[in-house]
Image 1 (cartoon, one colour):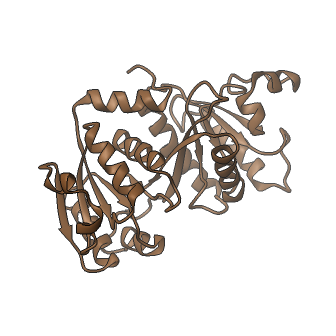
Image 2: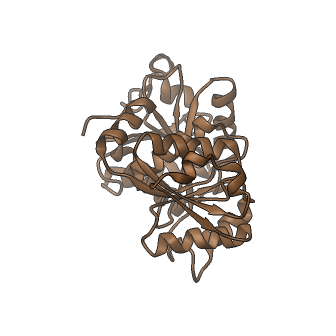
Image 3: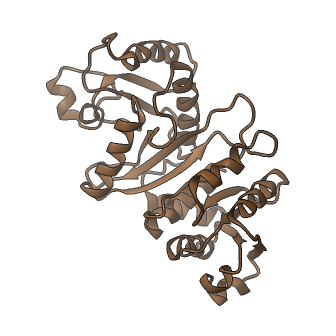
Length: 301
């Protein structure tokens, strides 16, 4: 498929695919979540299952409620709403799960429930973000900014496998993976830099399929050809990274907040690992960010 290099291209690809995914939204009581779901419906790549209590009648537009592509499911409590959404996925009646105005702990508790949840034994829960920034000519994938505090080597392996699989759904046949650190030197004082050496060896042995991987390197080196040239680095990843793997949640989350606030980047994000894509939006996220996350989830479902 043709490479998707921007969010408008992603939305256009989905709209032209003529394949709607079923989006189960838990407690859609806020204007941003409802607006994002409505936009996905209007762009013809999602049908909606809106799950919640009596507040649905107050928050959902009458035209949305009347649509034949929208199903309303009553649930008395947030926990019941989350459990209902998870059950719909497991029954094959929903393809994507989305958080509305429900506490994150309650939402994740239903997903991670060992008996009835969506994370199968041995699977890793991790978060992938995708950014479109004015200073970069293509979409930039990065993880993990929200779930895993200090990834082990084994967790990084699984994280990268999830991430490159998603990159390929954007038509990126050989994702360029940058292993992020503050320097190009491997130092035992920073275990992540030692892990990077092993990851590159594994990549060379085909563990991640067709990828180009390099590191350690800083973000600027990964995304700016001039910075890489000044440092004498010649990897094809330098200055042209598709995917950034951060050493820990602190650095990843700081990058996320910095490029959205100061860099004016548009952002989408999903949880990977469960049997379906999960949208774990913050209540402070804009309707546009939530819409783009729905689109990302639909492309990944």
